[in-house]
Image (cartoon, rainbow, N blue to C red; front, side, top):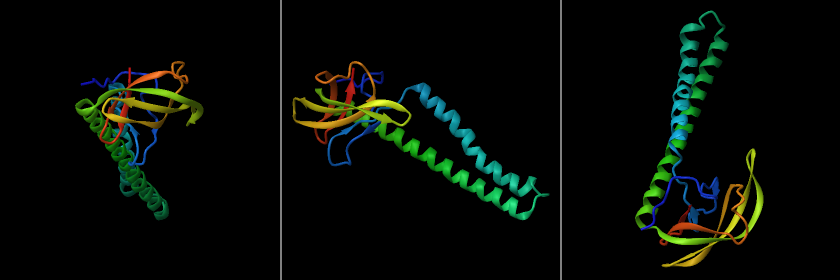
Length: 176
């Protein structure tokens, strides 16, 4: 049974994957401990900003006009709701990554992905590449997929990458 590592491999960490649930999907693997710690440390203060604004509007801004206090209170509620939604989204994303990792470790099949095309693309503020992959291995029919990831010299057309694939629904992860 192949081991799905958590370390870096060229093209492994898909920033965006293709797949709407019907076709192949690149697994979002769990991020490292430092990133999780950083997000956890930032989430707590963010969750306190909104309630602090509401408390300030109710108890501390007594000399302000009512409209200003109302605006501050509504803004505090809005910030609180936004931050809670952000934390919940990140939590669901992290849980999905763990679920994908466990599934690939349990039923994954070692396979090969050949890069058949590579195009430059934008990944927000960074530049990256969009790779067209032909994934083949034992126990499933070959399939094509697209992966967008950070640039790496090893990601050239014709290069072969090691992947682990769940043959039942073509969930895959690029591994070193």
